[in-house]
Image (cartoon, rainbow, N blue to C red; front, side):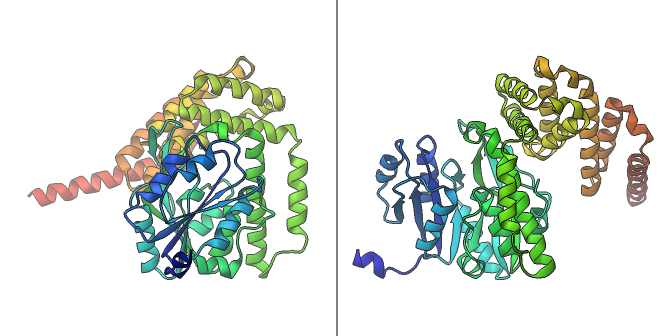
Length: 415
């Protein structure tokens, strides 16, 4: 023990909390022990697990592992803070017990933080995998301005993909105990007020999607805690500090929301979309039926429901391999509507049209003019309403003018 106490502090402290995570834990632990960067300690907090988690953790014989065990389940926030208190590294890397770090993960993030002292946190893109570990696709990066993106509560990033400076945590404080969920977003926003945040385009994490791990009620809470974190951040940005009572009143509001059928219905819709993304159509249909049963008025707001489906496809399915993934997602979802939601079938073409037009806007921003023209044509073919949109045709004709100009320049160079 004395020899360990005298060892120099590692460069990185990897912090993981696990509660009854035996199914995926071995792969997560091995992914850290197999890193190309070896100057780290691996702090694992067993949060009162009652399955085989403790036995699995004790089977690893690596001196870099530091095992901490809670006598009872304290929850993720308190467990992570216990890990932070024990951490000795200059940098903190996070990993959840069902995710996997790619071999170069620590090396790449350390290298980037070393080279950019103005940054307090660096995240990365992720490879999404299904419960069996099969790759679904790579997350697309639309913005490197991590702080501004976090102020949009619908922007979601993965806790496991981050590495941040210990000094930043010491400056702004650890995870706040009041945040049962989205404690990471609250911390990142506080760090971002004092230093830069960056997202690397290179995927360094495999993130496991399995809806069974997070029920609909939890989804409601996650969003509301995220909204609270953003509200507090905006108050700090305007006045330098949080308004007294905002945190407490926000927590009380979340408690009341738990019983609202509307929130549960929307959360179940989100879970159904995730099942569809994973290709489990039977659970997709069943969960959609549960959403309508929990909140029948959901179908009275069909325009909003269709919009949600489209943006889910654009933000999630489209980042898996290609935008065609979003088209497949929307088609599959509308093809597997339960009888209680059959009234949505008539919106299928409108949803596909909107999805193609969203992709066209992104193609325009990226300068992919040939793809843009194709997507506009497909968008109009699915929804003739886009014929009346001047912005769409402005993009279309600008792309043609650009094409004609490039052809002229090419012909002149050939001469």
